[in-house]
Image 1 (tube, one colour):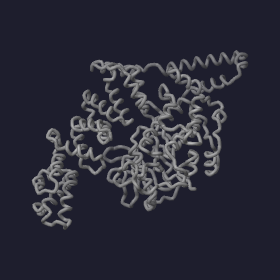
Image 2 (tube, helix red, strand yellow):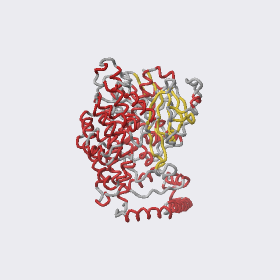
Image 3 (tube, rainbow, N blue to C red):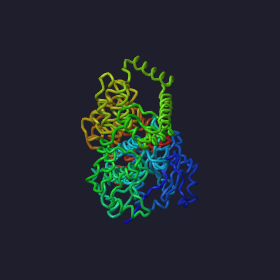
Image 4 (cartoon, helix red, strand yellow):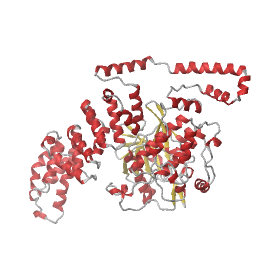
Length: 635
């Protein structure tokens, strides 16, 4: 039995710590030799974030977009190991397909001149969950806030058949976003279990039944022993419930400050996961004040047998209460008070840490000592008064912020829109924090006038897309388009329409085609052409529908010149009439036009047909000149 964790330790993060000891670089000249270089003509390497046994992670900048990214590069000698390369591709596929706010996105994948593969990832600035745990255990509300986001990320990954298999605090980052100091980003899908078909050359999963080499064999154990499910430790077949076990270990660690199983030997740790009972949390951390219902959730996550465990990430979400607002990571009430305040929906008072510690001490004293100690009561009264004054000051309305809210309300009123109620804000927050199912229900229950708010329509479309309810998503977009046509330029809107167009839901696909044809402008028509003639796999019915739609006179009137000449060339096929298009192609054609013309060139040069290939009229070199003219103009 072998244990392994194939990916470099440093995550794609700005604060990634350097390795404990410097590894000898596998790259000639060392990892620093890439610093200052521009990879693939667009990613300028700025600095080394960290290096592992198989590769290095760099901070970089996209030279055209001026966007910071993280670039993970395999060492050259690792490219000779097919399994390592396949796992690198797996990370790229997994991270790019999941497309969830709580998962670090992969945006590009390529190969360098020396044969090394590189992966471009979202640049994450924050701290790892392991660093947060090192400062001490978290209170209950903050833990639940983190775990809910983990569960939301897993709902999306598991719906695609992707199992992470190496969830641990080092692979979870906490970043500040939109006022939330603990916004979760899950990293490192390098040893994820994905449908084998996802690794085929054409990118089609073929229903998940494609034949191919298995990257993990029974008896091989991959992951980190401290967070392995029992079946994973035994090298047995695993599913999404192994990720949920890892979440249970992390939840235990967040609430108590310690993992349930501790041992010096990885083998001993694996044995404890398989055979040892989980120590009760109230024994590991008696003063943690974990509510019984939360203790039960952890126990269910850590069941030895998968069938007795929480069965899905969606089930886990249903078991975890939603905090009234994102808890503060810096200062919080003691666990029991914070938990009760969130449960009642009251405003959380942020008490100075010193006062909170004293209150903890006083609360722990025997009642007799409290009754007998007049001085203690007086001290408690003073401390409470200080806490109330500080809390009142911290929640005092900022005149500038209140003025901004007033201006926003006035703007809505001027546009005939209702003001945003607290009920609407709560519904929007559910979607913002990834609780899409409850968010949809809350948004659908709003009064009709508030459903017309742009933010509500945006949130509803987003939630429907995240839950793959594509027909409802397209209807929500239709209402939103009628109110604000400018959303056609929103990349997220374009992605929603594309995904709905290729979905198996025929109604959703038909509605998406309406958006492509009428609402998304030239970008929509470009996507329509790609569906009909592109290289990506799409359902045959969708491809046929796109080809019929793209030649419609109504659509042609709105095409760009480049798309128009490409469509005309594609329609002519292997015909001498294509020669009539050459002047237009030289003036307006693009890469798509070249893709249509090059097969003609290949047919002419194949030697199978000669002058009898039906293309005798362009054997004079006019085709080659046209392709060369387009390529020169594009350069």
